[in-house]
Length: 355
Image (cartoon, rainbow, N blue to C red; front, side, top):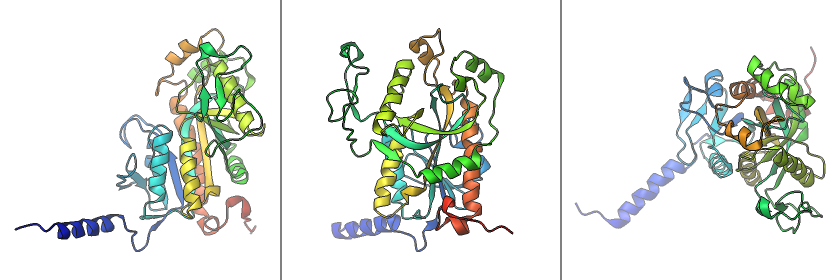
């Protein structure tokens, strides 16, 4: 039978419309868990950032997600998990794809980024958990090779559209700086600040080599700020740059504590989606847990220390994965348990009557 081109075109359009048109009733989502990588399978093997959430939140429903990096996971309580892939580009693409997916109603959803990170030993210790108020991009910049940095310059990184490091006035381009909802961050921190965190002899041994008071502490929950870069940097001098970069772009309000990768990409997509009325940017939280320090202890060079920084070989890798779940879970549970109030009102705006 001769195939008519016009008929084939019509059938293709109808098929595409069927695949991508919104269902009659989109699934209302209460919380989106955003993780960045997984070591193998979603369950039952060596864990990455997704596995504990899948197993412990019973995210048993698998949803295809061809427009994103990895299939989605969901439970029957309105909790959805997305695995974005590593790096800013994959995170931005996956979150945008999810935000535009007609299967879901994300207009009231809370977003919880939960992943591991490097930590500044001045502020935090191995296995600790950090709620971010500020997220700053460390990739949007000019750079010259370290061997060509002028003697008077503290770094070879220069803000875009500037001529020297930290030139005033500060004029960050769109996507450089994200200020999260401080009241929501404070609520999450106060809810979880006393969460017990794992510690062991290996972590205590690694902590003992550092001079900073915070670095020697057992793991704890705190607030601090997040500098994101797709380059995995390491070393004391790079840490000094990260602290200065954070201070510069936040007018001294932010304090660099964690080095991550994907969060600016995630927040950029959430910003655009919020403008389109698809999500509420004020409901975004970033939780990063410390798998390794961002610099070596005294007596070890940055190169020697970097050689030890392999995924799965960090000084507190499994403990940081555990902390991401154990600190993030109470927030998810509170939102789901009190959805009748938190659907339309942020937690910090809600008062519960005493009985």
